[in-house]
Each structure stands twice: as C-alpha cells, then as structure tokens.
Image 1 (cartoon, rainbow, N blue to C red):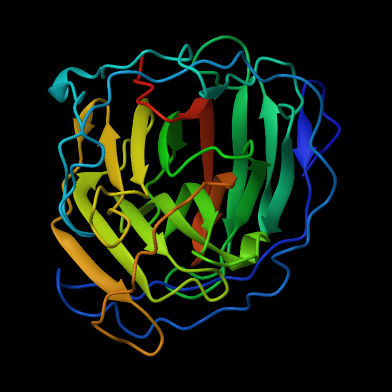
Image 2 (image 1 turned 90 degrees about the horizontal axis):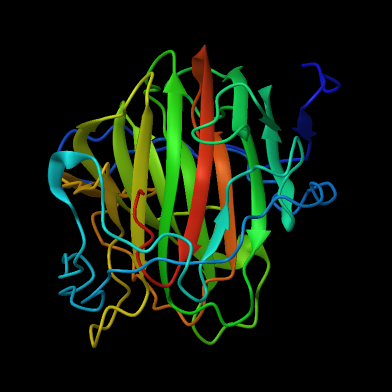
Length: 335
C-alpha cells in the first residue's frame, strides 16, 4: 500500500496473532473448538501516531441507572435509548471527563493515539475519502487476508491510554461505515481494557476487556479475560445485520460496577439509538466449556483500541471508516 499519498498518514506497527471464535449454533452451548492462533507480538508497536487533532473534551449526558443491571448477564435500567428514530439522547462532548475525536486535525492521528496491530493486507490512516462530518475520518483501507473460517485475519488498529482514574463505567460512541460486504469473521471495531482486581499488571496483554464487534454479519459484544489467549469469553450475538454502505451510529455501555452485583455487567450496545438484543449467548473457549468466565469488576478503564481487527480470514477486500469517536462517564448520544 502507498504510504506517501497526499493527505494520508499510515499506521504501521507489529501486531498480534489471530484467535478464533468457533461457529455458534445455539444460544446456550459452548462456542466450539475454533483453534487458538499465534498470540505473539502483543507489545509490539511503533511510535506515537501524530500530533494534534483531538477535539475538545466534552461529554455524554442522559444516563441514569447504569448500575441497575441484575447480575452479570442482566440488562439494567440505563435511560436514553431513543427508539428506531435514529437518534439518541446525550449531551455530546460537553460533560466533564468526556473525550471526543473528530479526526479533523488533518491527515495525522489525534494526539495520544499510537499504532498497535498490523497484520495482513491493508492500511489504517486518517484521510478525506469518506468523513461523517467535516473533512477527515479514520480509514481502515482495503483490508484483506487469511482464509474465511480459519484463524488469522487482517488487523489494523490504534490504541490510546486513558487519563488516570477514568473510572469503572465507560460509555462510547462512534459512527461507522462499512463496504462492500458484511464479514462473516469476527471483526472487532472497538475495545476498552482494565486491570484485573488486585493486580499490579498494567500492560495491555494483562488486562480484562470489553469489545464491540460483528460476527456472522451481525453485531456482537464480548467480555474477555486478558489476551493472549483472550478466553474463556462471554459472547453476545445480536439478530441485527451490520449496516452496509451507510453511516451507522454505534453506542455502548461497559458497566464495570454493576451496582451491588458480584461481577461486572454484560456489555450493552445501541444502533442508531435502539438497543440491540442478544438472542445468542455462549461461552467460547479452547478447550470448549459451558462455564461462564467471572466478569471481574472494574476500578478504572485504562486503554482503548479502535480500527478493524479480524480473528479469521477476510477474502473480500473491505473498507471501514470510523468518525466522531467519543468516550466518557455518561452517555454521549449520536447527535
């Protein structure tokens, strides 16, 4: 890929190996025996991605009852979903502690983001080919590689270290555009990580994490223990197909407090203001098991990762654009 085009900044880094999610055929069974890929190179990364470009801090409003989930698998009473109208309530980038990135600093990564995973074909860069608003967006360009259904796929991501004491609840928002086809493989878009309770290990490969992704052409969310190996993991697959050839607003809530419950809550995800349902839920592990992992509680989220990262092959050359990314302690909303 051409790294020297005008108005583009390439992300280049060493990366991690693949890890497979087996085919799931029911909502209760184990995920099956998809093999473990090579997990070496987690810490391999090249230098910081670039200078300015972060938009002003601001925030998310309109969240109530985030601790109202019942048990690790329950869904709580967080308010603010707006129904099918394509909007959601929130205060945008105005609340204290909210961080927003509009990628409008030109063809450079926003301050603080650095290259992370880089496997197979494709490029991750900030360019002006398809912004949601403004002129620029983050572009996972022409990703392809590996064999569909087999471990190992293209991964192009960046990572960001959150401010100290961010807290145990993380709301997020991103606008995402995907073309030309819906991947069948596990395709991650965003994750947030945190140290395990009573652990002094803070490197990214020692952290528990929540993930927003797609799988079998549908939206998915996962809770993971540290990677490698990243399992046994609790997998939630929706019945909602990935939006193709259009911008989609994804929001998520990672509630690491979960009230007085003994474990962190399941991830929750909204598409264009409507909360997704999870008709398929299962444990993936190698060897297979039906025993759910303990979703350890959060003291502070510490690391973010975004881009596109596939754990199985991607035969069709595919592009993702991500824009107007935000995280905070309250709901951001799509507006």
